[in-house]
Amino acid sequence: MSLLQLLQQAQGGQGLSELAGKIGMDSAKADELTALLAPVIGKATKAQAEGGGLSGIIGALQGEDQAAMYDNPLNAVTDAGQAQGASFLNGILGNGGADNLAAQAAERTGIDLAQVSAFLPALAAMAQGGMQKTMPDAALSAMAPKPEGASGIMGLLGGLMGKSQAGAADLSMLTSFLDADGDGSMVDDIMEKLQG
Image (cartoon, rainbow, N blue to C red; front, side, top):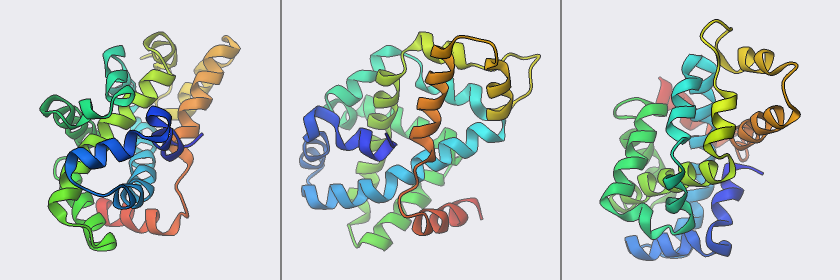
């Protein structure tokens, strides 16, 4: 399952519509934005993990109370939810990256920038909560790289050799969320602009 699919399944498929309604956006626009933004969030998270930031990603996903942002997307629109989503985005995109991503998404979709800017951190908080719900703290802790081991995804894969199949399955689940990038071309183009 991709991160996009996970978000689309929130609250029995009604989560994104509820989130959109709270922001004052129609559900079709929310679906369009999610289809654009979720793969970018996933790819940026994967790039951060592979660049030596895996511990930070695991830390951002820990805290089982975060699942409430996914279970009830209206929590993601609160000040606390928006702050949590913004913090996650800053961690994977760097300071100012979320603003750049929102501006690009608004330009590509024609959706008002103010709406995109409100939707993006809430969506990120939902994504965080959804991944946390799927991978509880115990599973995330088992994935954390050891200081003496190699860094990044490859080091983590090596560290899991000989460990339980459950740990390997958990890692596979995390990477599957982060691997899917939609049709690729638009996501890659956005990533290049964010990194450039």
